[in-house]
Length: 216
Ligand SMILES: CCCCCCCCCCCCC/C=C/[C@@H](O)[C@H](COP(=O)(O)O)NC(=O)CCCCCCCCCCCCCCC
Image (cartoon, rainbow, N blue to C red; front, side, top):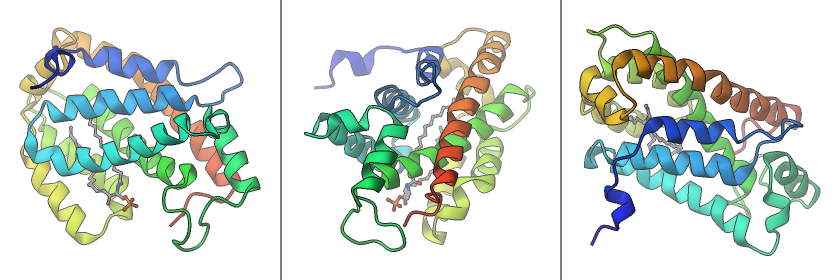
């Protein structure tokens, strides 16, 4: 039986707000909040239909890997992305050039979510500036092609392209977001985007500084 929480109508504003709480005063990214943000996004995606389940399955697997790090004996090192990078690099816990002993390293796993966050940023920006007759599937595909697609093999790109066609049109999509009338959706996106962007930028700079942007 589906648990009640899953049935509750939820508001995308609450999900995106979680990303607000990701950054500490010294601009460290709190992994618990980052993961909570993704969990909410996956719930939203699941509510759009089962055609997205191959995407949410992969996202859930990656979320679970991060949750496991956060509940394991080294949990404290996984408090922020910064502390995780330091800990895993200092202890040789990351496969840097080819896949090997650490397929579930935090650095590698988080990099996949980080790349997906760029897709989210681009997609939300397109939604924010869209007009009534804009097509969600085109906005989603454009955002994907500009970001995640370059990391995915042909077969995944193909499957993603098929899934995008199943996206509801803009009016229904906005309704499912449950934020209010379109003007409110646009305003909410305008508030949320700079924060999501900042989380992305901080992570990008950290990964770049440590040469981690191409982890296998
Ligand atoms: C609502 C529309 C949903 C469109 C989602 C667009 C993203 C498409 C991603 C397609 C990923 C397909 C699944 C497989 C991925 C993996 O191969 C690949 C590589 O992993 P590996 O290195 O371990 O092998 N994984 C990834 O790149 C991570 C993908 C994580 C995707 C998370 C997507 C969550 C989407 C949340 C949607 C929320 C929309 C809110 C908008 C208002």
